[in-house]
Image (cartoon, rainbow, N blue to C red; front, side, top):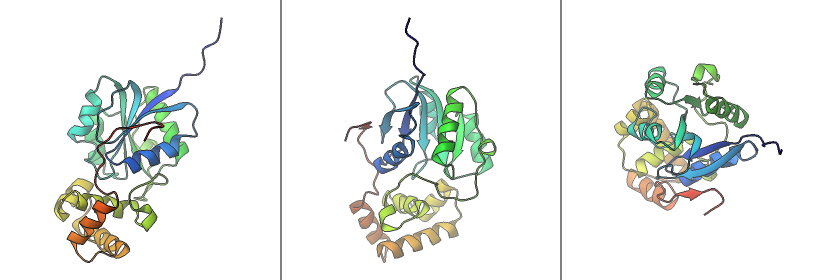
Length: 221
């Protein structure tokens, strides 16, 4: 009788920006035991998966209804939130809502893959268990504007501006201080040559800072 091969972890990557989910896919594609089933931009997970990895880039945080909907999706066994926000109260609310893991974007691809395997086996992971680093930037991955020299945080703030968020709205969603938000805006404007919010929005629209609306299937376009 033939011996069954090793079980592969079926993974969905969830964020409203195609470049972000494709960047995550690139991080994880070398791990043969992880099968990336869906790259979901602005759509629900429709294939059965072991883990749905929710990237918070320019999205609601882990305690939001969007994440609760993933937890309630019968096709998803476990939900993991992938964020650079290490606020302990936010993490606790997220885990209390049924999320199985809260992981820091400072993790390397090896650390992320291992954490996803642990979650798929039934473990609940908190940041103190995966050694969250105090660096508020992802170690790997991709984001809009990276080629133009924008950091991940500058890119996220610019994406939220392009979506129409005010500075106060951005501070509330990202859990940043208003002064930090203004600093990221100033640095981003300098890098893209914008002299006003309206020009920044137009630049964002022209350079992929509006959320995508099409499902991106693995290997598709």
